[in-house]
Structures are given as structure tokens and as C-alpha cells.
Length: 300
Ligand code: GDP
Image (cartoon, rainbow, N blue to C red; front, top):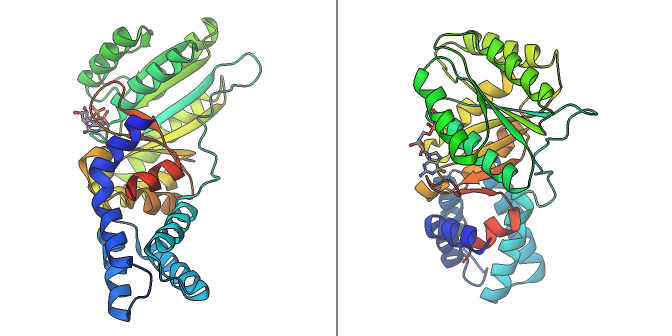
């Protein structure tokens, strides 16, 4: 966890430092409040959450007559944590019905880090001594299944795959079927994320989910968003949110941006929590997301 904190703060602290410098003792002019707003917007926090934060912060600092920078920092910290959502359910849901495996669908646009996320999640679950099976339902590129197999052998879990161009839903079906036969705890399914037509995506993802659910309920639909894509990431969130019931977000490449506010914006957009963040390209660089830890890293 300390490592997560240091990884986060290295890329994120410019936002926190900027806010703290501007906030000073909390006794600000209109222009200074505008600068705070601009700083939040520049960090991809989004208009709604920025307005909410500034309104609440101003009201609290004024009500308490705060002049002390340490107290102003504490109020900022509390308001930021409130905005990130300290009590959202960030557990990965993998408990299947009765004897059935938990089924996790991992969705998102290609290149966001889906396959990497599936591999790293497998690693996390294996470390918790859960048995895992991977499904390569991204059949659009043969390389995607190869990449998943590399992860499978690295982590020591089997992978169900088919030929390039196979029906993704049939791979999903076969994976869950094998998962039930082998009595594994969790089935993780990597999907294709071609966004050229929304209806194509809707058909494909909807079908994967429907077909999989003929055998076992999907316990989690994780949407992978690349934190470096800003507004584009939010658009993707909206589109995926319309085609499938997303239950959690994985925000990758948070190491590659100082715009940590995207965490807040993307949760707001979808109304579901960020459950994991990607902090690098390595096999261990996926961390469970925690609101307090994130804000403390910002303000470090
Ligand atoms: P997919 O097409 O969505 O399955 O994406 P991949 O899993 O193939 O990942 C695309 C690229 O992003 C790869 O080079 C990954 O190593 C890289 N990547 C994934 N997650 C992270 C992250 O958290 N941080 C960084 N810096 N790179 C990442």
C-alpha cells in the first residue's frame, strides 16, 4: 500500500500541490477561487464535481472562519474524500451462485489495458488462493489470445481460446462451461472492444453476456478506461454504460497522467465505483482503489 501511495503521488501530486498552494489559509478572493476551479477542471475532475467541491469548500471555510493553512488542508482533504466516495462498494464481486464460479467480464476499448487487467486480476486472485480460468473472447485479433496465454502461463492459470474470428459469445460460453466442469472459483473473460459502431458493440457484448448467463450469472462487469485519454475516456464510459450494465471501473495508466481528477469524473459519469487502478506496465502494477489513500497521495 505504501508503494501504491508513492506511485500515485509521483504522478498526481501536481494537482494536490497546486490546490494547496492556491488554498493557503483558506481566505481567498473571487479570482483565487476561480483559479482553484481552473486547477480542478484542468485535472479532469469535471464541471459538476468541481462546482460541488468549490461550493462546499467555500461554505465550510467561511462558516469556520478558517485562516490556518493546516486546517484549510484538512477541510480540503475531507471534501475531496467525500467527492471520491469513501463508502462506495469497491469489492470485486466473484462469489457465484451456489457451486457456480463467479464470472467477471472485462470490457473496454482496445488499447486501454483490458488484457493486461485480466492477467493482473488473475494474479491477484491466485495470490488469494482462488482457482481461476481465463477466456479469450477477444477473437478479433489472434494476438490478443496469444497475449492472454502469456499471462496465463506466467500466472499459472489455464486459458480457453478459439481461432481468430470465432464468435466471442461461443468462447465465453465454452469458458464458463469449462469453469463449471473444473469447479474453478472465478472465470475472467477478456472481450473485444471495437468501437466503430455502437450497435455492433452492443450486439457483441450483449450476446456474450446473454450466452454466458445461460450457465452462470455474471457477477461483475468491469469497464477498463485509460486515464490518459481524458474526455475520450468519459465518452467511452457513456457508450459502454449504455450497452452493458457496468458494475465497476478499472482506471489504467494513472501513472501516465497528472490528471487524477478523471477518477471522480468517470465515477460520476457511470454512477459506479473505480475498483482498481493501473499504475504501470508491470504484473504487480494493479492496485485496489481506496478513496482516502488516493486523496492522501494527491495532497502528499
Ligand atoms: P487491450 O487492447 O485493452 O487488451 O490493452 P493491453 O492490455 O494490450 O494494453 C495496452 C498497453 O497498455 C500495453 O502496452 C500495456 O502494457 C499498457 N498498460 C496497461 N495498463 C497500464 C498501466 O496501468 N500503466 C501503463 N503505463 N501502461 C499500461
